[in-house]
Length: 306
Image (cartoon, rainbow, N blue to C red; front, side, top):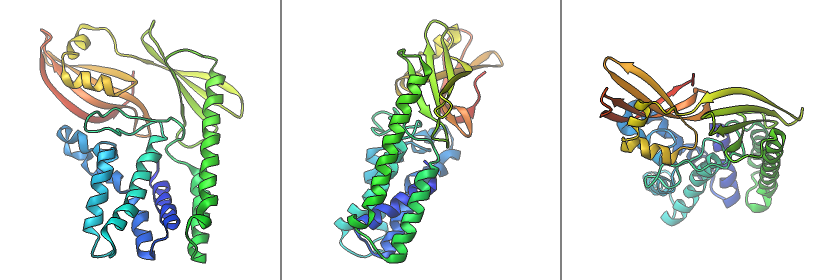
């Protein structure tokens, strides 16, 4: 989700558990703490596990971040350590829960596995929750009200929004008229009435991408993405342990193959529909003409399928 939504949820949780004004603003900021992992994106492939939506977005990462900030901020936010841990845990865990609702998902069980668990219910930017939470929190802050009784209407609005999102997902699946195994409907980036459907066709080894409009009750085929081919060089890359781990952790794998002198570079990526690119590269393998793995490394790149 977007940073503003994470910050607002941090503030909403702070108002719900009744904290001081200073702790309120700390919890607002903590709502975005897991996304500080973007600072590691430029470190190279060796740091893949701490890059965006890596270890910081796991259950273990939530615990570590909670204890760390509860200890670091004890001078500026005095009080019982256990209570501070409990309060700090809520916005950080809420960040992971909200990202789980998106189609990008979160690696909840990292570092054991970096499989991205996702509910595919909401997009990356949620304008409706941003609006009602912004006005609601401004009112509560101005009136100096807090507690469950003061915030329950905002939580109820969140509940209604998620129910409508679940209903929209079900209706979008129905509009595709493709009641087949391998079909997944995911929300668009912003518009809650526009959905996307991805279908893996094993006979052609292609991903079929559909645009679904709930208001117009229409489903239209948009693009076809080639899946992993059966070329010898792609099969040779399957000898890589990193590639096999990648295939276990990602649901829509694609491949890009380029010649590098006498060798071949095989890049494995996952369809993510990110604003930075349709495919996020995860693993790059160099294969010799004889099919030997010369190099394997984790990658953090975005590219478009051809």
